[in-house]
Each structure stands twice: as structure tokens, then as C-alpha cells.
Image (cartoon, rainbow, N blue to C red; front, side, top):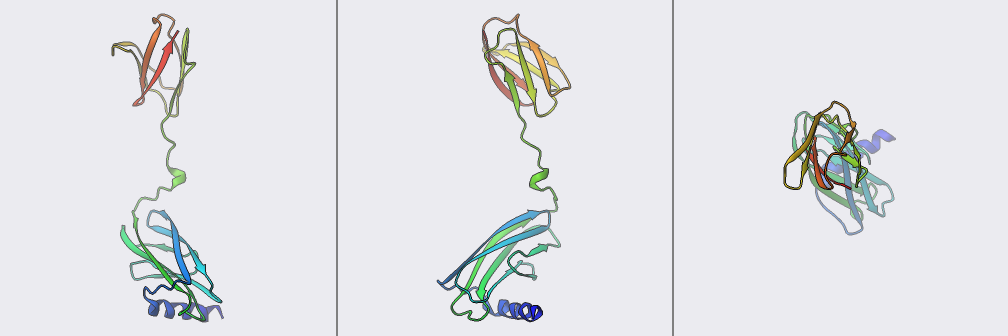
Length: 186
């Protein structure tokens, strides 16, 4: 019986087009990983036998509420989601289309590195500051408010302690890993 519904679903998708009736609506969210797209289709409205599908915009279709498709090439495709009642497409029949872009990159959200962060503490400081970063510091520079470099060092760690007891009281800027942080020497 599942095969009959799948076949019926395909036939209805081919005939339905882009009609939309007020009794139903459809939308989708997508998860893109390289050339692969996972859709989550949400249909609302009364349907005795609800059916879901997708037109991937490259000549392929997907069946079901959560179809997956892998494109042959990177590009922008118009993807359409369908929601309708298999028993009565005249009372419940909705289509939603949106452009999605796929690339050959396979980076997923989980693989994206955390943003670069640099911390300086305590702030205000008296004798020393601790500098920590999400990436190795390599080198850092301390400037006074006149823009004069008053201290610099090269390190290969994510955290270092700096003696600032010789610096006069005032406001200083720490520059490292492309970021600037302000701290106060008491």
C-alpha cells in the first residue's frame, strides 16, 4: 500500500502546480551541508490524508515530510514544498517556494570554529594582568592613550601573565590576535 501512495503522490505533484487554498498552508526549513539539503516541511490545515513533497528545482522530487536531496552541482535552486490532502486536493492544497544555495563546501555549523575571543583581567589591575585567548596569542602589544607602545611580547600560548607594575596609572589598550581590549592600571 505504501507504494501506491508514493505513486499517487508523484502523480498529484505533477498535476498540482502552484495552487493554494485558504484552508491549508505550507512552509519549510532547510539544513544545508555542502551539496546535500534536508527539508523539514510543515503543513497546516485540515487534511484527512495529509501528503508532503518537494520539488528540488533540478528535475528531482522528494516524497514525505522530511525529504533529503544531494545536488549534482553547486548553485541556487528554487525549491518548492507541497502539502495537500490525498483524498481531496480541492479543499487542501498548498505550495511554498524559496531559493536555496548549495556549495561544494561540506562545513557544517558544528565544524565552524568558535569566534576569536580575548580577555584581560583583573580590570582594573594593580601589578599584573592575565591575557587569555581562544587561539594562541603569538604576540601582543600594550599602548597608552597617546598611541605609544609601552610593552610588547611574543608568546605561543592561549594565556599569559604580564607584569604591569612599572606602568603609570592610566588607561591602556591591549592589541592581540587582531582584537583590541581596554584595561585600567591603578
